[in-house]
Every structure is written in C-alpha cells, then in structure tokens.
Length: 171
Image (cartoon, rainbow, N blue to C red):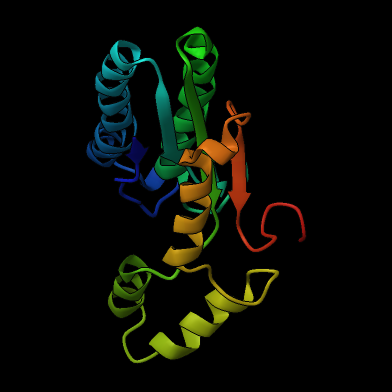
C-alpha cells in the first residue's frame, strides 16, 4: 500500500490559520492513519505486506514558511517508524521516502499563481536551489517506491529514504 495523497501549505506559525492547520492534519496525517489502519488489518489476515508512505524533507529540515506542512510530514515519519516496529511479527514492512522538490503540476500551479509572467525564471531558481541542479521527476520517485515495495527490499523496514538531489546533506 502506497500513501501518496497529501496537500501542501505556505505559511509560518503566525500566518497559518487554525482552519488551514486542521485541513492539513486531516488530509496528511489522518488520511495516512486511516489507510494504514485498513491496510494492516488486511495484511495481517493475508500473512504480510508492505506500506510505503510519502513523507518529505520538510519532516527533518527546517524549511521557511512550511510550518503546518512540516508538522504533518513529521507525523508521517513518526507513524512510519511506529508501524514498522509494531508489525514486524506480522511480516509487514513499513518505510517512507522523503522527496525534495519534484517537478509536478503542483509546482507549475504554484508558479502560475504566485509569479505570473515570471514562471520560467522562478522555475530555474527553484531548480538551481537543489544541489544536483534540478528538480526530481515523478518517475524517479516511482522507481524508488517500486523497489521498496518489491521483494528485493525484503530486508528494509523502518527507514526514511531521502530522495532529494542532495538537499538534506549537501548544502
């Protein structure tokens, strides 16, 4: 089971409304909780399985204006570790990946909304902020997800994989 749904938010503690905080918590934390709980029940009945949660570098790195988003991804990381430990005896592996900036429609929409007429320049600025010099691609994320969900990764559980173009460790 792959938990890949989630929403982002831009804002610091004092600019994040309680409504936005609750919305992010409901989707990014409670949504992961609900799907993992339903999946674990079925996996226990069938003799095991794999849970892969999409986390974010925001769970472990202070990113400006990502207060609520970072909080939710920190919760996803903690839930991943807890589930991995609690279900070892049921042959259920649980891991997460922590992407850096990935070029998705969300990025394009963000640029269109916040930088009209400057989209190309801002895209280049965001890309060059990654130590590797570009954003990741959805296909690169999918390749790691596929590996972690495969039998080849049978010895991997309770791990958070940074897939971030060097963002976390190469500043």
